[in-house]
Amino acid sequence: MDDEHEDHEDHGHSTAAWTGVGVILLGSAVASVGVLLPSLLLGIIGAVIILIGAGAGKVLSMAGYGAKGHHAQAGSLVDAPDESGAETLGKS
Image 1 (cartoon, rainbow, N blue to C red):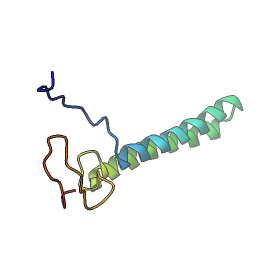
Image 2 (cartoon, rainbow, N blue to C red):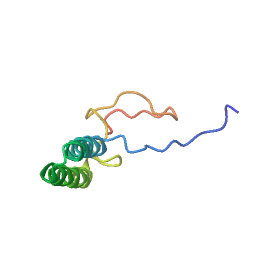
Image 3 (cartoon, rainbow, N blue to C red):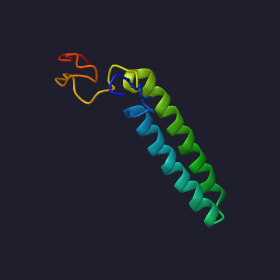
Image 4 (cartoon, rainbow, N blue to C red):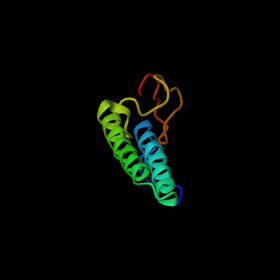
């Protein structure tokens, strides 16, 4: 069982994904308040914020802040070995 190597998916843990989800959640909250207070204006504002969040996530992903982008890791230098034991110093 020690010889087996599991490949784990990234699940989108990136700046682009977190930004997109955060803005979409904000838009959902605004739209929810619009439903509670019967306000068409708040519902439309919430929908616009949701669209902005989806766009922001896509733009940041295209700019390299996605899971596979060159800004995916927190620092510019990584000095810890990866899962296979290979050195990753200077790779980002």
